[in-house]
Length: 407
Image (cartoon, rainbow, N blue to C red; front, side, top):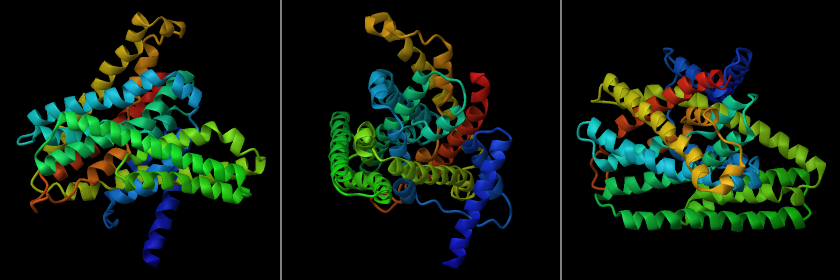
């Protein structure tokens, strides 16, 4: 117990030093932490890290999503709902579809169901990475709003694709009509549970005699309550957290009128989210040895080739999707022409900001070891390794070059 606690404290201390170093050399800390984690994992004698996907989803995902929703203006979110939904749903499904067909033809013995599984894993960009890289850079507000809005919702759509593909692999059967109907039920009921839960928390904050400390503690509990309530009924916990976070954010001026409460909450959330973000990105780098050890019969070179091909595809598909998404509506909708033209620069930056992150890795690691009949899950280790390569390429290559592209 003491050894584990010491290890966690040591890791946190190292993470803080690395973040300070990243700021000193002017590199976005998510990118730097992934590289540093990878370097640390290769040092002989460093303990091998086992990432529990359940822990990642439950501990890290709800507050990170809630905080992103909290700082997203509902009015801006609604104003840009069309490009946000086209990216968060349309691009995720488009990417999943293309990756499914390419991977099933590229990897020997890889089925279409496994292809959709991989597609669902690598399709959602990471909100934190893009926001951190773009912080302090002069970019249009529209760009930030669309990227943040996309990242709020795309985790839900990609996880739903993943769950349906996983069910198809485990059972051997798949119905597109049934899956489409289930998608709307799972996402829609997630929103309903999120709004109901948010209304309850709104009443508690607004009408009960809370203190600044209680208000801050309740806001930390809220994303976990919303996420667990939705997941308990087998609906989308991600959509519950996002919808609840947007509602509370929209009503925050009514609820948190006390200046001390707002200051207290800001301190609590700033510290908590910073620690979580920093830990998440170094854990990605540290997880490589376990992923490589699990490759087994597959060669590392084959895995790297597959990973690079899939990385190139997801980067190219984002360009193919973003430019028409931002330009075509201006040809057909007079209302769209009232807004300034996106030109070629804004779509270029938006396309290049599609970095993958911890949600993709945690989703890949959540693939079960065994099938329903007790046999080994096919290609599991290869899928996890390919996912790591896609995260590393998009996060490091795109993350390091994005500031130069913006300039």
